[in-house]
Amino acid sequence: MPEKPKFDLKSRLTSVRLAIFLFTVIALVSILGTFIPQGKEPMEYFSAYGERLGFWILKSGLANIYHSPVFILLLFLLFLNLFSCLVTQLPNFLRKWETLGSRDRLIKSGPLLTHASMILILLGALAGLVFSDSEDLNLQEGDAKPILASPFSLKLEKFRINYYDREETQVSDFLCEVSLWQGPARIEDATIKVNHPLNHQGRRIYLVSYHEVPTLVRRAVVRIIPPGQEPGEMGLTFGRREKVPGLNLDLELKKYLADFRVDLETGEFVTASMEPRNPAVYLTAYRGQEEIGKGWVFLKHPGPVPGNTLPLAIQFVGYEPVSLVNLYVKKDPGLPLIWAGFILGTIGVCLVLFRLGRKPKV
Image (tube, rainbow, N blue to C red; front, side, top):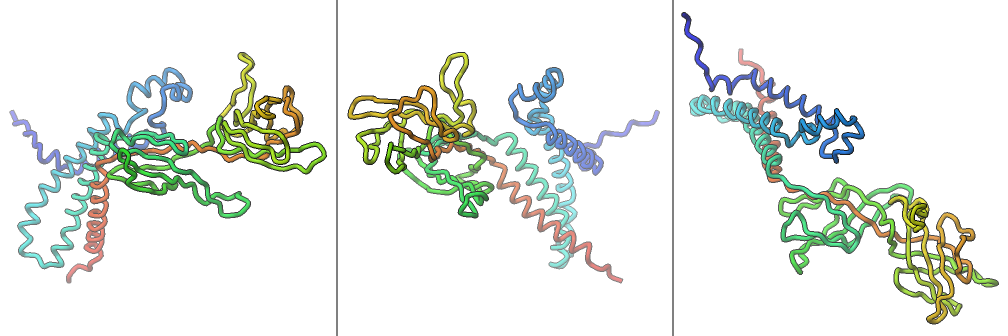
């Protein structure tokens, strides 16, 4: 009987076919991860794909495919394949090292550098998948929160929007002015822009989005229209009585709602959304210590409002919003390896292309 061929682990690990197979499978899995949203809440999958298919997507791990054991195993096998190829080629390269000129040494290093770069990139990707950490931070101006359970905290000092034009129709930048703290000590001030994260000791902090706080404003501006007098504007802040110029009258801002609605079940006044679709303020008027009127005043509907007992005509004409900013914090220990691999790979590819471009000796 003919002998069965022995299993050669070395030839299997260094097989080009294995590398092509792994590259193909990783590409197909990545395509699935592109088309299927990753890391969403379960109800979003049930809503988008139906109960049965949504359950299967969650159960199979397709909703978090890049952190699944299968994807990590594929990357690890590709790492073994490339590492085995490098280890196999290196002794032969070193044996020829003494016989090569300095230029040939440099040129023939290209393929080895390319293999080494891919190994570094895979190591960085694996380290990131296994050991990375991230979190979302939602901050109002003046708020401070710890960063990834570290001794550092981040405080949002101010959020602002820059425009190209005076009419404020074209946005040029969204900016977060922040400060970093370690306990009671302020250690750094920085500005975070879209696509320009803050780097701090391996943690990258990105600006993701913002919206106005729907029940809070920094300042509301109202127009006072006294009978027989010229209208005038004044600013109001929460919890503070402001003297109305020229009148024996004080006004206090009690409430703000971005999208005023009446809850039909409870009869309470609520905001229907986070968007300023129907902004309104609730004001109280005083003469001395006596309350003499109160009521809602609407930004987009300046006419009379039922139930408003304010003693004179008041219009809500503007406000300074308080912004709620969403920041994304990520710590990825594999990122330095990926960058090192990218730089090494660029050098290796340049050397390979230079080698291919050389004319053969006749």
